[in-house]
Amino acid sequence: MEHKKVRVRFAPSPTGGLHLGGVRTVLFNYLFAKQHKGDFVLRIEDTDQTRYVPGAEEYISECLSWCGLKPDESPAMGGPYGPYRQSERKPLYRQYAEQLVASGHAYYAFDTPEELENMRQTLKTPENPSPQYNHVVREKMRNSLTLPDAEVQELLTRNTPHVIRINMPANEELTFTDMVRGEVTFNTSQVDDKVLLKADGMPTYHLAVVVDDYLMKITHAFRGEEWLPSAPVHLLLWKYLGWEADMPQWAHLPLILKPDGNGKLSKRDGDRLGFPVYAMNWTDPKSGELTKGFRERGFLPEAFINMLAMLGWNDGTEQEIFSLEELIQKFSMERVHKAGAKFDYEKAKWFNHQYIHHKDNETLAALFLPVLAEKGLSADPAYVATVAGLVKERCYFVNEIWDHGFFFFQSPESYDEAAVKPKWNADKEAFFTAWSSLLESLTSATAADLEVAFKALATEKNLKMGDVQLPFRIMLTGGKFGPPVFDIVATLGVAETRNRIAKGVDAFK
RNA sequence: GCCGCGUUGGUCAAGGGGUUAAGACGCCUCCCUUUCACGGAGGAGUCACGGGUUCGAUUCCCGUACGUGGUACCA
Image 1 (cartoon, rainbow, N blue to C red):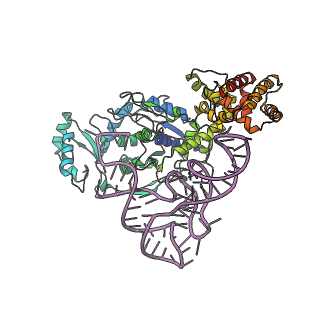
Image 2 (tube, rainbow, N blue to C red):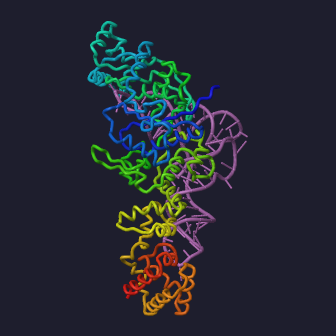
């Protein structure tokens, strides 16, 4: 058997933000390609000029780079099979449509939108709510199958607006093997005569995907399950165009569903349920409406990718944390789930938590510095790294370093007084005054040494650790939270600690 | 309506004719920690239903139900 180089493509329409499910399709494409040392191409399917949204293509590219899933060929970088934007390939498609007409597998249709609408209205019944332009209906319509040849020629030469439709066989069983679903069978009687070439000369998805996959030598075609019902059209097109031997292997990926019930996950669900659905923030240029993204929410791309990979795939072991490299190595189509998965934001957060917890402090600091800057604060990166190391295990998101460690950057503005005031007394005040001056004379300020000194002083003053440690923590942080107290002191430094003791003693009186 | 695809705890899921039906998230309890977490130990909770096939079905077959997708000159 000849061995063709694996080539896959991600082919989005530039109509808006990039959805979770889209990113997962990219991911599976990418993993499969890289595992087989193949090519991953980005192709922009902008054949519907009415839905084109400026900026969407750039946005998609940026999403891919953020995720670390860079294409080998794309509109921006070019490649041997360009152009990679279907609008720029427009002149290519007509000849294939005409070829199909010539061979009898397609025909011209002159029906106006009004005529189509009229047909649907009159044929509509409770049993058949959406009548199709199919092998029986086409007999009653105005097309090159029903009109006399002379009239068709006449209409054509007069440039009458028309489309080219596929001539679906009346009753044929079509079977193909899907990489995730196995054998899938359709009867052609159930699918209508899809438009292949629109009146504006642009191809529809059906024609374009087949022509471009062929021309770009795509070997494996991954797409969402919503495409499964139109697979017979594509299958027939590959056959009718005479390219059957080169048809890619199909893989229809399961859908990502709403957490709470019915249907595909949509951006509206994110707004409604309070989590991102797009990879990155997306602002619709027309409405100005902002849809939140995972990146801006504080997700690390590795965590985002890992989470997505586990939605519909697993390696059969108990391992859940995978690097991109590992995924490339271990990914397998056989283990892709058939059923759609409800999206669980809690689990997504858990993945991010894991990655933040195990991320090195310097990287975290670099990510957190901008958050600090937004608050009008700045700090030494090394200091921020220390802080990150102290609080990262309790952060789900990078910006939460602030929530768990703000007191490293500013003195607490208020205290959890209920936790200390009722038990506050002169002995404790004396203890802290003594502790403050002891601090000044200490030769070592490591957490361990500080703790020893603190304990010794407490014993000397006849106080229990529990009685003074909590008040001390609250002087430093304002509340009952945060890393171990002596780590805080060691990080804050003696001078700042003494300031806060003085302030606290004063406040607790 | 019709057609396709699917169905293991609340969610993600492993498994697949005989098992105490993994594991993870979430939830609960306890331990660690005189804070909060992390970590550790436990706990509650499941094979959609009905028929077959079989000595035996969660697993195979057929139905039903439910879910989901499609049914555009949108992708």
